[in-house]
Length: 408
Ligand code: NIG
Ligand code: FE
Image (tube, rainbow, N blue to C red):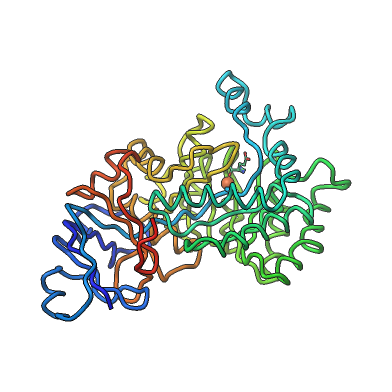
């Protein structure tokens, strides 16, 4: 056992509901607190003094100076395994072209597919690990990573193998997701329905066999896959034993309904979700994931996070870090900015990047500081936890702990 502290404040996030709005007076803020760690898990959170008296012989890891402590963050939606760069898309968009226009003229997802296909496993592993380490430096210790820039059996499997390999080089938890249904590749001879069938027949069985991912994602949109074919695909993927997540309602509405109907763990994006569908989503078990990084990268409106919470939904916030729509990768900056536009309480933002996003990944063992939870937490050199969001991502994490051990 080990006692870590004292922290000026520990924000535990325990005892908060999984769904719906939160006010900041619901937050438990332990002043001059300590964390008792046992075998990588939280044993007790209490005042440092109490813990010292109760466990007089325990090893102490002293926190120097004035620091606050939060549960480590969970980024439940990223595409950080990719080759190349789309700075030119970004510049073209800012000069007036739309995301879809750029995609139609050879930029967009397809250009990342070409770069990712031509990268070898070693190169992809190196850049993916660099991005993982950047996320860890922000205090993020659980990272979902999608495939989706391979779009054929060989390259989708290559991406997922790289993610699996990356796991052997990092203590962060990586959660792989198969997004072979990102787009119908231009070199696939057949309809989009046939491509989806190809994924079911040729890619997912191998993903299972090699234990490369337990989750399947699809991009439902006019430019990608249509609602009906997507629903059929998702139901079949579910039958194969995969958990489902969906890129839904990014530009046009309707697909978040499908996510709910197929029992998806999460529906992500939702920038275009209409009020009726917000209600439908909010009453379900499907997590609504806002991706403010994509709104910032594309200059599009934000996900209606306020309405989702007011309707009682489970709101997570993730970075969507990818080379196209969301190149920033700084979840803390993005979540803070979403809060200013959507009027979210600090509690709602913190919940959205911790236990609520962990729930979207079926990882209920983390995201709060409470007995039995994974001892992943982040510290900041400041006397007030509010400063983390107030500085909109520019307050650097002081230390990041995984399983009770300092890693960054
Ligand atoms: O979540 N919307 C579809 N997929 C990604 C973008 C991928 C890309 O532009 O490369 C997203 O925004
Ligand atoms: Fe995405």
